[in-house]
Length: 125
View 1: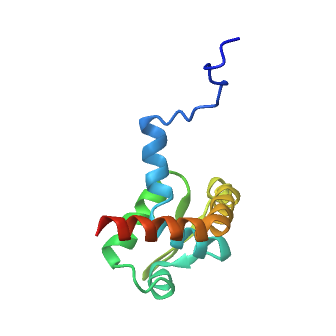
View 2: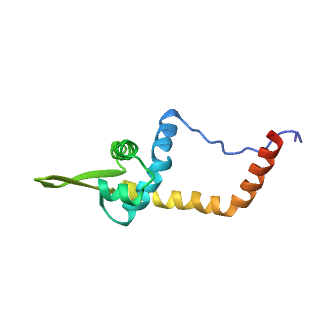
View 3: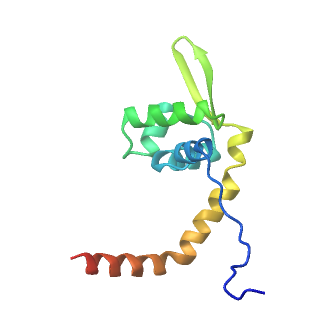
């Protein structure tokens, strides 16, 4: 056997549709919105209050992306005056476990990552 041969490894295959989906459901505001909607349905202004740093424009765009991907649904709750609330879908609920795995990984490795960042930043100066 050739000692220089590498063992077979599983490679990530990240296609354009995968990348687009991950970019849309794991971005900065989507995670905050999903965190809120996992607890309970919310109206737009309730989401704005619970995520005060998000702009109206960014929240609207985030909700539309999540709705387009079937992660969130927009439900009409009254017609006069018009009132809607946003709810996480069954598909959206399936995101919780993989996101929790990523967060656990981040918690476990954050000290190493912070050290690497500090080294990088001091070398870059």
